[in-house]
Image (cartoon, rainbow, N blue to C red; front, side, top):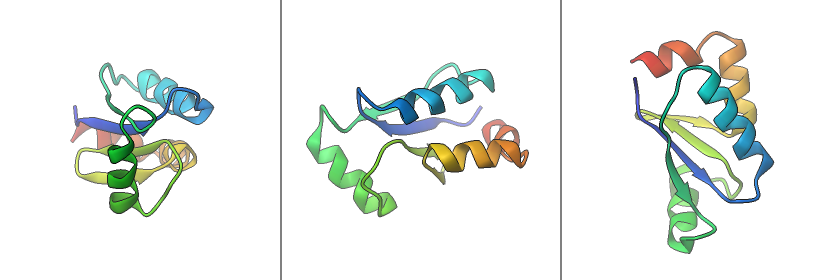
Length: 85
């Protein structure tokens, strides 16, 4: 299974929703980068994605986007193959 990295913060309902969907699809471990605990990681996230909000999700080397993009990817049938690579 591909590594899932997610930029998150503690009080983010979209992060919780994204993690729940990934768990439903069999992801047992997420490399979670807490931008609320590590401000330098927020700057890294912005540099990588151009976005300031969380979650920001990477699966392997593929940038997925936020929670809405993750859900849309799953609905199109693209999440399972991406996780399996």
